[in-house]
Each structure stands twice: as C-alpha cells, then as structure tokens.
Image (cartoon, rainbow, N blue to C red; front, side, top):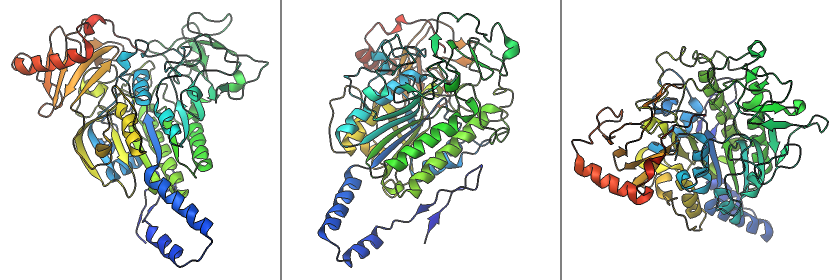
Length: 535
C-alpha cells in the first residue's frame, strides 16, 4: 500500500495519508447480501460525502507570507503547513480583507468588506458583538444545509451588548451567529479577560471569586505592568502595561476569576484538544470547524516543548508550535477516516509584525528569516505584506496539487462554500470562486479592496493603487511602513512584487482607470481617516 507519512517536528506522531479505498469498499458491498437498510445507509452517506464534505478553516494570527517554508522560508521549517500547501492549491495572491485581526475575521465569517461596518476595527475585550445576530454568516449558511458548526480559539469579534457580566451567561456571541459550539478567548491573548469561554460561560469560574473587567480604569489594589514592573516576567514595550496575569502585563484591567485564568504556555495545547475532541464527536458529519489559532500573536508563550527549537526566540518557536498543532489536527482527521471527505483551508488574518508590544527578541534573533518574504510592509500596512498571506486549499483525492496565481480572498469563502454544498446566497461582496479554490480554474477575482486601519486601496489584476493618506509613513512603535503618502501610489506587482517603483506619475491613464474603479466602491470620501490605529 502506498502511504505518505509526515513526521511531527516535535514528537514521533505522524499523519499518514492512505490511498483511496473506495474500490475495496465497492467489492465488499457488491459481494455481501446484507439487509436493505445497510445499503440505504451506505448510499445516504456516499451522497453526503459528495455534496456536503466536512469543512475545516485553519486561521493563524499574524503569520506572514514568508513565515511558511512552502512559501519560500529557508530559516524555519513548517512541514505540516507545507504538506497542505504542497498537496493542495497554494495561492500566491491570497488575501485577508484587512491588515488587522478583527476586520479580517469579520470579512471571513460574513463575506462582507469590513470597511462597510464602521465598528469593524481592533476591538477591546469588552466590546459588544460586532456581527449582527440577523446577519448572514458562513456558519449560518452551512447550518441550513445540515452542518454541525464549531469555533475553537480566538474570537475577537465582540461579545454581549457592551455591558458584559462575565459571571453570567454571555450573549449574544458565537452561538447566536451560527456556531453550535464555541470554545474561545474573548479577544486576544494580550487583552483581558484572560479566560476561556465555553458556549457563553467562563470556563472553570468560581462564583465566590467573580470577574471584573475594565478598559478605562484599574481596580483598587491591583498591580499593573506600569506601576509594578518587578512582578512581570515579560517586559512590555508599548501599550501593554495594565493588569498582570501569569507575569505578563496586558491591555485592560481585570480583577478576580483566579481559577478561570488560562496558563499562557498551555493555550495552543488547550485549543487543539478542544478541536480534536469536537471533531471526534461529530465525525458522522457533515461539520464545519473554524479553528482560530492564536499563534504567533503576542505575547508569544510557546510550551516548553518548543522553547528554543527555532533559534529565533518565542516568535519562531510559536510558529513551530502552531505547525505541530496543525499536524496533530490533520492526524486526527486521518485517524477518524475523515481526511478524504474534508476540505481544508489554511490562512492567516493579516501579515507579520515583530515588535507588537513586548520585548521578546523577535527582532534580535530574526537572523536571515524574512517574515514578509519578498513583500513590503507588514501588519497594519496597505503595502502587500499587510494583507497578502499564506492561503491554501487542500482536499485529499479531490484537489490536485498546484500553485495558483489567481486573485482570491477569504471573504469569498461564504459564496464559494454555498456553491459547494448546492445552495446560493445573495451576497454583496463575497464571490463564488469555488472552481478556483478547487484548483479547476485560474480565473479568480478581477479586483479587491484592501483595508488597513480604515484606510483602503485597490488591487486590480496585477496592479495595486494606494490613494494619498495623511499621517506617518512608518508606524514607529512597530517599525512598519504602513503605506501612507502625500502622493498616489501605483505598482505593477507582477514586475515589482517588492513595490519599489511607483508608476503613478509615468502611467496616468492606468491610475485614472483604477481610481474610477476604486471610487465606485468607496465613494470620494475615503481619505477622511487620517489616524493610524495600532493595537
């Protein structure tokens, strides 16, 4: 029997991809005179597998285009991500909708450009639910087609109505916008509350030690990173000097809930265990799993098993940890006999950042590694590295390995998955590119509006146009070029992927055409936002 075996970079675990055994099943069925019920059940399952495959979206956090070895990284190895990329469609022009996390997640789940929602920006942990409970979402659409749906990991799309009592059931949340099961962190690892939320309830909460959370003022007697640096084990650089949890200063203030607080070094393992357990208990499918990983977002706290393995400090180690988790999830799918009936999408919410609030040697130990690959910019940026991210589709036996230059966006998963399961939804922004995702076509999007901290630009064909924006050219705290300029910027990305030659002055006709297209989408008041929003 032919077998593809991929070894885990940390343990001896493997996920074997076995050859198709449909022919053997057919022989057994054809020679067995079982009762008609068994035959009907088999036929029903076969139909389900054809039209309603399981769907798993693996969504990393701040993983850059150049952070994956299948995308050209040479100083770090990501064998499990590579196995998906090299065994499926590896897109070279795959985009998040935004260069920051909350807007990208909004676009992914709703199929709507985040700039259409004025509140779709980086949210505090106390923000109300961003997605309307009446709004169409990816999990809602799939639920109507008989799917069980789950989100495990980072949420960061708001919870409740804006005055959340963390000691009671929190609603509305993921369960009210289409997820049957949700096990999440409210916002980010660097924000309070630092607790897990299980279907709306804080997990392992002691009612005698209630949680209090504020993003405006501290609670009396509670230490902070700013006032009590001697209590910290991780030094803050900017914006992360409020409540201290596990020696790490955070954004926001929190009191109580001691038994419910997570251990940062266990977050990746904890979410992986929840995802694997849910998959095993729903293997009769069809199911949709949104596995929203935390890595390599700050604070980077890899488990001890991974510390030092990358040679790049905690950020590199966190990427290796994430890659191992992905391998373990794929191994679970394989062991449960689900891999050949599961469409997997792998991507990231935005581009990379090194110093995003803590001193953790991410820059000092970078060496020759280039998280952005050949791209310019990074997280928060309108340049390519802000939104062009690793983007892979994998379905064993259904998708043939290829590299595609087609223009695709995470926002299009909603319309494309609707087409996959045989339905159609009226979507404003999400486009049906199922044939492209399946590797059967190279005709992706013609154009795409990209967003970074409420500023927008236009990708059209091989061209990118960035209109003038006031404000700094470089975000000083994170040392990233963010794309602001007093002049129009026009780049031919096919010939100049690093965006070093601005052609706006030498190609005025192309600039005019793209500006007309851009203003058709955005209107003429797109440049009112002048201030860069960081963290």
